[in-house]
Length: 56
Image 1: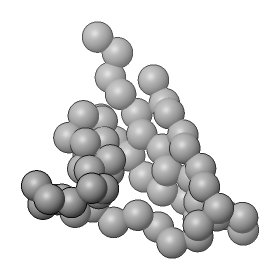
Image 2 (image 1 turned 45 degrees about the vertical axis):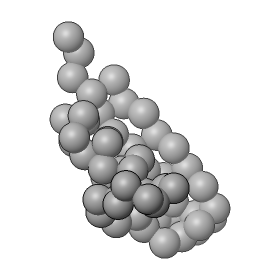
Image 3 (image 1 turned 30 degrees about the vertical axis):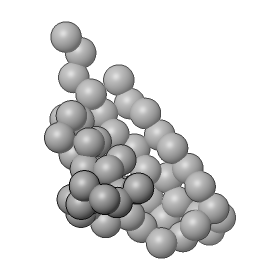
């Protein structure tokens, strides 16, 4: 399974671990833990972040 999510912000995401008091910053951390592989592509109108999950 491949999932892609896009937005209009050109800055590529960076992997970080959120603190317990942070309200955001967990999405890419979870993707990194669960996905077989993931990446991001910068576009002229923003970016696309994608990930692939193994079939079970």
